[in-house]
Length: 315
Image: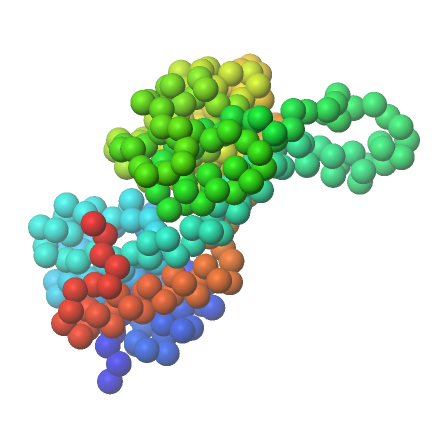
């Protein structure tokens, strides 16, 4: 009999096919497990799969008294109460760096799209305004990449890949993170210093109490009216109200966002700006990334059920 694994978050069924070939999956489809399964069913659950951003606290863990492994599909684990898991001797694993290349690619895509005003340009053609020779202030020439200063907040695997990619566009690169790294880029001593230095602020830091609303009104002011912000990490890192205010006041030049404080993100003031490019949290959503994340999930579960430490533990 294959080992039983609870699927806690809502995932497209296609993402679970390979995992389902090795384990018996009990899919809660994003609902509270107690709404889908009986207490008797949950009493035997030893391992679960969750999306890293889905809130998962001690009270929920207690509904599964034999739970000893929480495996996050993806690199993030900010939704999991790690202290509560540790108190209950529950191991937590994730998929480190599995989608780093895809996320870095999207970060650069967002940077290029917003700085070159790709969406207004697309609309200029589709609307017929180009053919009609109607002038548009949004079609004025913009600064190019050579000499552009790109600041990266967070120099983990994704931050490093972003840096390598933007450096190829003849940009200058600097970064700020909790510690200095052995990388060929300038280190700045604070996020404030990074924002004052750069033209594009790339957010590639993990979500947590120390990064919550780290990019606030003050940081956006330091970024300046010619500056852009790109976020591919977690929406909680930006004070979204402050971002809307900065865009409305033209205190910054634009933004590229793949993540939001509340997801899915409904149309609102943020979505009305022509100098903002929005994507629906698809940074790691490539075929290769999903295979790599599934490999990590499978490796973590196989190690757990074999009585070994998780292959990719959250450290």
